[in-house]
Image (cartoon, rainbow, N blue to C red):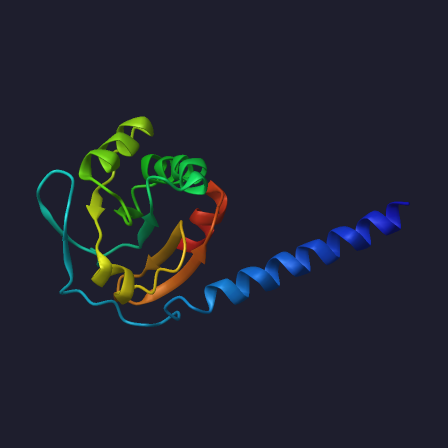
Length: 160
């Protein structure tokens, strides 16, 4: 019985990893340079660039209507609060109004910058689903990437 359960667990993990690998092949490849000239407006009316400021940057692409985004954004907030060595910028995508993004931000008590993405951003970063994460290193190269739910530990380990 235990042997059968162990085999089924291993098969499930292999299928999950393979599926994740296939989904992520459509994203930017690691070691790709980031366009440091692309600026976006923030919820506070400022302009922000999706580039590293001498420490790893987690760029989190989300949609306010995405239930997986609602489930995982707290993990990102925890990382931001606990680790000064990592920057975080969340980019709202596919939203109907700025008020919708503001409601999402208030609901989750987010304290990191929230940028308002557009079709150009979606295309430049090859965002195919939500949430999508990129970790950008100090040289403004993609160091890591992921699509879908990620735990706090998973996000942290990708940012090392």
